Image (cartoon, helix red, strand yellow):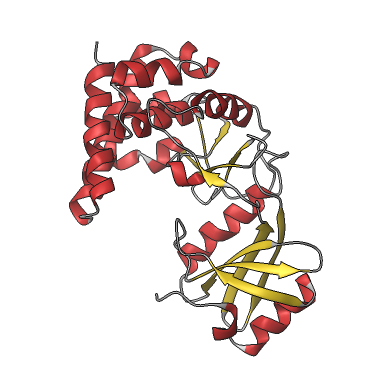
Length: 268
């Protein structure tokens, strides 16, 4: 869908937003890094909010957005606080605290962000599983890409983010890292987020061995059996090959190639 702003939505939606947020003083569209047709910063008397929205005609995407909202209520400061969600006028909207002056993470080899991200992933792995949230298992998400033996390695009861692209890690001016966009939250082995991060590091210019060294700063990844790490890497490679078949975006081919290099490196 084309991008929309709050003024483009039905009056019922705008009225529902006003009931939750109070008077909206200004609206700024946000284009980068978001897949929802509505992606805006709202200025309110209680402070700025980030709001995103989808039409109710996309039930699977709405379910993903609901999951993101519910998970964000339980992040204990590791991501922006969820404020409200509404269904009105054929739309589903969610709102979070807006992180002022935040920037996307830098995954390049010379980046000073990497130690903070490794620490963030350690903290994420210790989060409790929120009650009442519909979460699939990693073995379900990867079912089409692995054998029964491979899938058993990724099974677990740790809350995972799973989408570690650099646009989903934001740094505020005080140097704090925040993880956003929890729509693909999953239950699985506690080291999987670090392994997924490793693939993105390779895509950002690291050698597989250097990326492995950064991932190994997360204790759960360091403790994982090499066979388990390779099982995941092989499935991730197949997943990204599948994605690359239907997308010609340059970043997709970079991540596909990185996943292949990561899988080859984990064989040794």
